[in-house]
Image 1 (cartoon, rainbow, N blue to C red):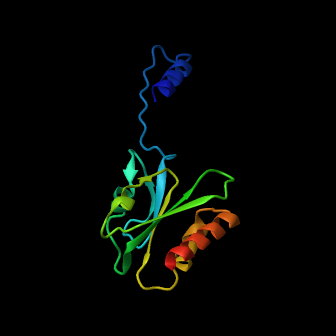
Image 2: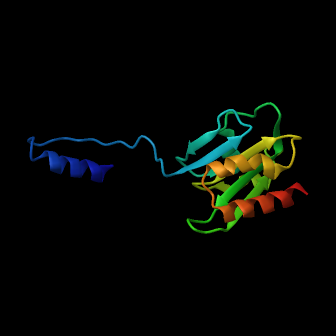
Length: 149
């Protein structure tokens, strides 16, 4: 912000004597994770500090009726063009050490509905919406089907 202010002041000095500019960052849009499924406040969530999975889940404003609180999944990609996907499952109702994993920018937290079909089928529409490649989608579906067993 300070560097931007200096550049603006330098540019304005051609038109005004001793310009004074202040710049403040309202939101760090590049640092966000995504929270979807059966939570009250689904969507992109800005990250202004390091968060655990449970803290990230809490930013969803609570559970929707019928949420599968015992099965929350983090889907994590490892970089552009990388088909490797990490799927981390944790219990959001009775938190244990799995819920203390750090949420990273770009992570996708998903809470499904309890007692509704195969888990991979409920997460698929959300994953398609976040731009995963076909290979990444296939990897996530394989892992989440294994978790269903």
